[in-house]
Length: 261
Image (cartoon, rainbow, N blue to C red; front, side):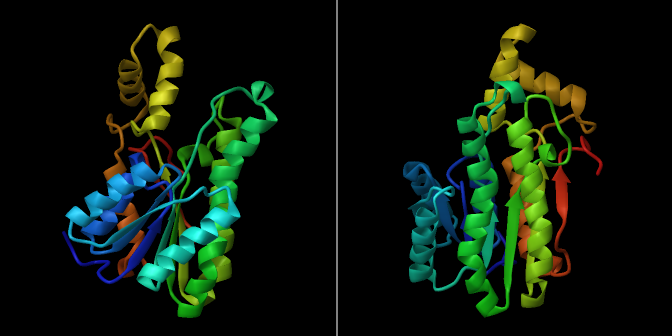
């Protein structure tokens, strides 16, 4: 437990499981109170309780980041309770694995709507509040797929490239208001997304999904180990802290050396 973020209020999208849960708990351990938003309210409530067990206050709300009205309602609830939002973490995400020629328009709209449009809508809903306070931290969760194009990830990769591009634009637009905007690019983490990807490869490789994940991790990552939600949460805490006040517009890999740019 620390006090690096004591007195600050964090709003985390997709906070109900996986990387989002890791981020919420890391923020709480650093002293921040946390708004846990998720499209599945029960998941958000579970993480809310974990945050409270760490001694911090928390609010759980149902938010669909692809729906402007849902986001605006969530932000109003957060401001009603905590009066401010100091840190916004745009983490909510979905994936569809398929070659471009097999993707449907519905696949495209869903993934881009959550992963890219969601960052736009959530940031827009919070930015004016941060501008008035002349202070704020925005952290967007992109992916190494936002830096390299991988087969089968046409729509997912596009959405994550967009997240990095929007991060760079917002960083320049908001710098004069003392708002920093950065992106984190996770590597291979055994959350529900990698469970899904591993299951797609399992039959053709003659392995279980867990064995597929371990094999990919061992063969591709120079450090030879997967990343964890806690790894991402720790970097979010750093980027949200005063120690990172001169870091903005960056997209930082947490991938064990898998991608080096």
